[in-house]
Length: 275
Ligand SMILES: Nc1ncnc2c1ncn2[C@@H]1O[C@H](COP(=O)(O)OP(=O)(O)OP(=O)(O)O)[C@@H](O)[C@H]1O
Image (tube, rainbow, N blue to C red; front, side):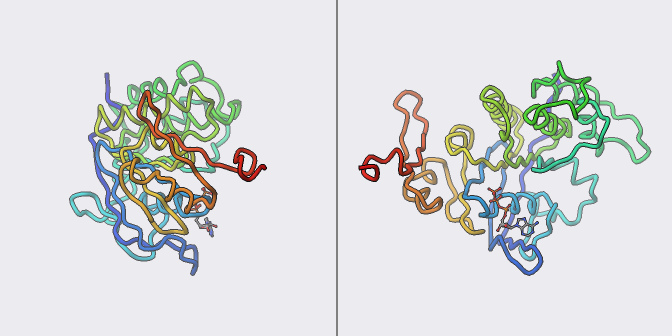
């Protein structure tokens, strides 16, 4: 079967500051998204996760610092089409142009692989069918995008990224709007792409249990700074999470599968506070 990605790729951000106007919201952030590795960005609302991901994807130029591929090549030196062959990003807040079917929107992901004059894209049809299949959209392929639910539409945008067949995949809250089954299935796809095809994956997740389950590495952001970076066991601790989120967060390890589970303890499930 045609692989979804090209070959795996890695990207390194070094001491990156990112600003909106004069307001610096990401401070001296360093990270890497490595081939064959799933890296999750977590942190409270407004801590800079999306902004940092967008800076790595060159959608928002950093104020200072560098973003390079593993071989040292600066992303700024690539043309848009060449960059889109190497990095795909699922952003939040997308709007589909009117009148498109699911398959037509997924085909947008093939744009960088077509010649400037819209010429042949030998792998295109197979890449699109595979992306539809991986996201469970084959039965909906001919439906108008505008007739889809929020979760179905989320899967179409993800499929469009997969059809791009890049070695790096950056996903901003990919499980947003998805029901339980598709949350699990999409994270399975993410894991598969990293393990079987060597894709480097960076994703923003709010669900800490999902981050623990899917990620090899977790970065915690607080007020625009990376305050922890390492394996889930080292980062997802009561101390780190309670400090970052400003609420007590208990962390347990499942005795059966060994996975980390987190529980934010609010007033209503803390017996000491309820008494
Ligand atoms: N377009 C914008 N113009 C100005 N400030 C912005 C803009 N987008 C985000 N910000 C600010 O930048 C900071 C970081 O926002 P960002 O969206 O990166 O955080 P986040 O961690 O992804 O948040 P969330 O979990 O809510 O999605 C916040 O203070 C936010 O108010």
